Amino acid sequence: MSDDDQIDDDPVPADPVPVDASLAALLADPATWSETDASMEDKILTEINADAGSHTDAPPSLTNVIAMSPPRRYAGSIAAGIAAALIILGGFAILASGDDRAEGVELALVGTELAPAATATALLLETPQGTRVELDVTGLAPAAEGEYYEAWLSQEGGGGVSAGTFHLRGGDGAIELWAGVAISDYPLIAVTIQAEAETLSSGRVVLKGGIAP
Amino acid sequence: MDDLIARFRAGDHDAVRVIYRQYGGAVMTVATSIVGDPGVAADVVQQTFMKAWRAAASFDASRELAPWLYSIARRTAIDAVRKDSRSRPADVDPNVLASDTISFERTWEIFEVRRAIDELPADEREVIRLSHLVGLPHGEISQRLEIPLGTVKSRSARALRRLKAALGHMADSANQTSSVDVKMDKE
Image (cartoon, rainbow over all chains, first blue to last red; front, side, top):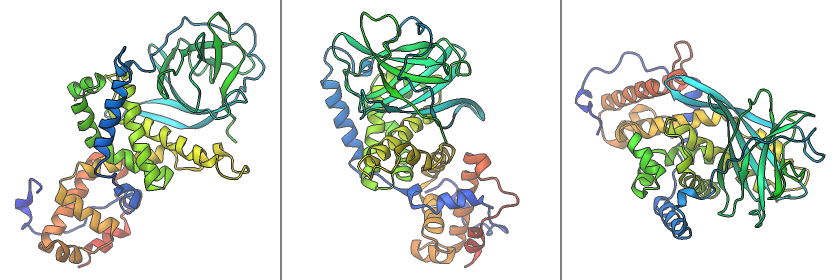
């Protein structure tokens, strides 16, 4: 019961509360009111328990460790095979406080012939500390021992800067990476598979994007 | 909230439950809006909270939790659409499919609206649901809920004021009254 039901006997408001047509449409949309099954909460907790139990050497929260590597650069132009274009899905508004918003860019990446089943979305957000890259990868096989994946921010026809490394041996999930360059200067992103001995980009691209039409 | 987020980041199960109860509905709404199929949407919800839990340690507590969860939900739903599209005829471009789904801004609005609805008192929420989703005039709502018509109108008005306060720009409409208002005013 709402707190002010005591005023239900008050005179009916003279005018109805106006509602924006967009809001009215959403209130009328069945999707807005969709509910999960009552067992969903328990399913999530069960899966969390299982996930925690499968990582006895490290807390589950360290799965998909944020791997930081020193900034590295491509030698010369981007190696052949890296598509220099991206699909921009739309801006991302983060509510820092009140109406303050920081704009980010959300990008889609698709797998190359090296990883045809892989897809990813990347959220790039410029912060005072650098560019944060939130990478969500699915369908990409865990890197074999002696190998790892590396994300690169790059320029069209130019060099690239490493945004960090990851291996996915704990499974798919959100990966947070950082780059010390601005999105505006390095607006492109790709992921390569690297051997541990390699200090520069291998050129073996596993994920790339496409230009928006 | 800071403590809750800290416990969530630490993987505290009770914190996970609280956050699920706060945001599960909104995540489901976003998932349903993008993927359509309720079963697939439920899978998206489960995957979203699992991904959030796995990534909790890297969550920046100075940020709002809602946009972060929303981001995960949207990406997970889009991935589900893409996976489904791979089983479709080859002439369907999964990237075009993803861009044709509801825009980023629109799904964020959907997420916010559902959160605002979930924060309404239960009796007000039910009036809004019956009037907007089901499309009942206030007189029929009064009969169905077995409460006075004045109570229905009061609850409706309070609920809409709360939604306006929570949604700000979306609900403000000095010159754009919905036709629903006219229907609601009928007895």
